[in-house]
Image 1 (cartoon, rainbow, N blue to C red):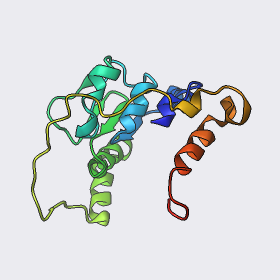
Image 2 (image 1 turned 120 degrees about the vertical axis):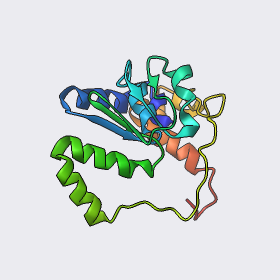
Image 3 (image 1 turned 90 degrees about the horizontal axis):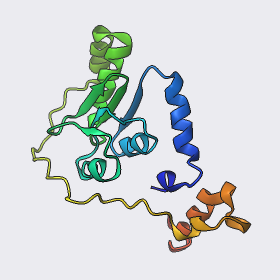
Image 4 (image 1 turned 135 degrees about the vertical axis):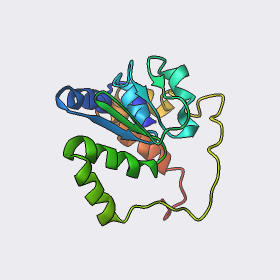
Length: 169
């Protein structure tokens, strides 16, 4: 979560600025962590991928976790989706909110979205502890030189990429 750990909060501040003029702010999967870190889910009901639900109470206690495992949650001007495949349901809800139910039906038909997975399984219980750490990467703590404040992301990327075998990404 390099974006959340950015001490300058560049991306999080960008999200806050966008939210100020947006009709809706939406996220899918662990994107809810970004909205929460920016404070954009404070006092809103929200969801995310089941593996990250335990992050809300520990890292973002002002976020109200939706009960059960809804595929998406619409609360006022926020729309959050669970795992990535639930983004399709969330997208249809977004289209309904912005363009009406008939438009959403047309999109559903044109996309031929009638889920019928070949297998069935249960959503596992969320981990007791949040699986992400919000401590900055050691290379990101430098404030001068090649890894100065304007280059934190690149330096962190370089550190990560230097650990991969050459030729692979």
